[in-house]
Each structure stands twice: as structure tokens, then as C-alpha cells.
Length: 109
Image (cartoon, rainbow, N blue to C red; front, side, top):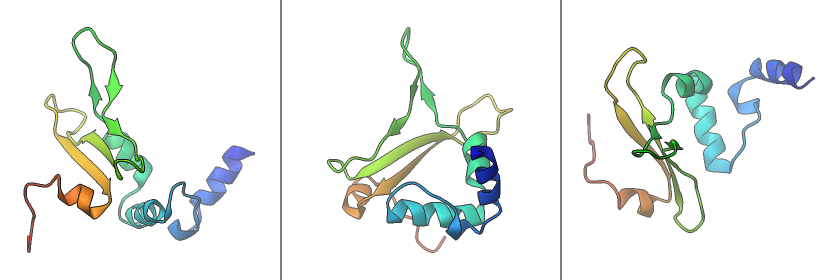
């Protein structure tokens, strides 16, 4: 039953699909889905896994909390056939928390 509901939902416009999260999270997901399929993007560019020497594999993710007011993912943007990593940081949160961590800004290309 759950699989049939999921399949039916995939046929709906992005704005009518179920999305978990607050209003800004929902808005970002609905907009992004119109540009590129989020499930394909997540599969193509997985969350980077940090493996310390002799340690346990850990996803490079900082979940949102009201204390820090942002969340963060590090994704490996390299093609699956590339040996090298091409890591990219994705942050979402309060502007004062995000801008305070930036060292450069891109203006007009």
C-alpha cells in the first residue's frame, strides 16, 4: 500500500508532494526538485564519509538545531569513476550564521 501511495505521489506536481521539514526546507526542496530530481542528485553526489585511522565511518553532516541555527552537509561532487574527491559544503540556516562562515562572495558571475 505504501509503495502505491509513493508511486502516485511521484506523479503530482512538486508543490503538492509531501515534504518533511519547516517552511524554508519545504520551499527549497520543492524549488530544487523543479531543477533536478533530488533523489537522483543525492544518489549521484553522496554525503562524504570521514574515516579516521582505525575509526568508525561517519557521515559529514551537522543536523539543524535551534542552538546553532544551521545545518550542513558535505557531499562528494566527483563523478563515480573519478579517483579524487571533489567535496562541496552545503549549508542552510540563519543568514548571520551562514555569512559569518563565508570568506568570499560571488557577484555578477
